[in-house]
Length: 437
Image (cartoon, rainbow, N blue to C red; front, side):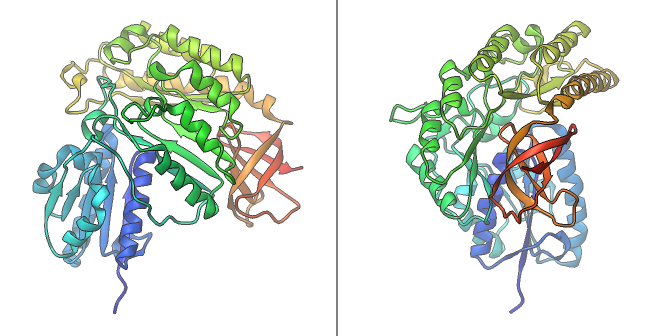
């Protein structure tokens, strides 16, 4: 019997990556073998993102390539999952004849049935949602040193530019017992670091019958024997509390790194975005976190060119980046997303102005970070080895507790999962280089 292969192309966030692992486990249980080539695969899934316009454009472009493949291999099964699937549903199926099925964000809970229906030749869209409870059955994971663990799904914030609440539903949390059991299972299989995932992790536990919040959950995860590090994304500034700051400081396995999206330094723009905080309130939380953890590093997201953003509004963003002093930023030009409240606003910042502002923002961040780089040389930092390539000058690679990439050499023969104390010799924007000491 000829082997059958599957290929999954994942767009978007870490939540999508986690769902991809669940889908892959189900396909392998059906006898499919993973492939890194789309053209020799029998079962293809595009796990999609609709947060910005560009991923959706890439999906349609990719489907054009798959259409040519399917003309030669008509038995190839093509599925669309993720946020675009949830948003478009039957319409996507109708408009893209190459697609066999559309699977929404909640449908992954019964992925086995969906695969079976697709194999049996059914063409369908499954976009039903359920925000009454949230449970994830155990599934087979590839051996890893660092792994994602979803703790909740959905969002109740309804930022005016964001489609997530409409495609992921309302906030609902997994029970702490289920989360801890998954983490223990991962640790038993060699995982040393977990990243806890949610659209807004600071809202964790609000729908559960037991009294528990995200700081409480961090303390529980911190107690798991054999686990060495804990990361998490994403935190919403309005829900990031003083209790959370102390939980990060007091639980030694929690990395000293916080991704706290500001989106804009202008209070007028933040109000239009429905972010429910001011820049001054955001800054106070940064100040408090640094007071409790002087070595903490921060990153942030920004949207440039939101409707009615003036030069003064954008200058407020530049001033915020300068004042906060981020370790890194992620920034994007605003694009209208159908279904959001901002979709009806006039997209009145010209494309060339958006591009100029985005370039200015990145240039400022780069210049500020470049000034800090010399101070990182000569320091020692603990690195968890997640990649090894003996053909490179610096064969070992991993992240430190501040989410910085580090490549280094060693006189020892290290293995995956080892933790090394590395002396930084050369600090660059995207990676630091050093030697184990």
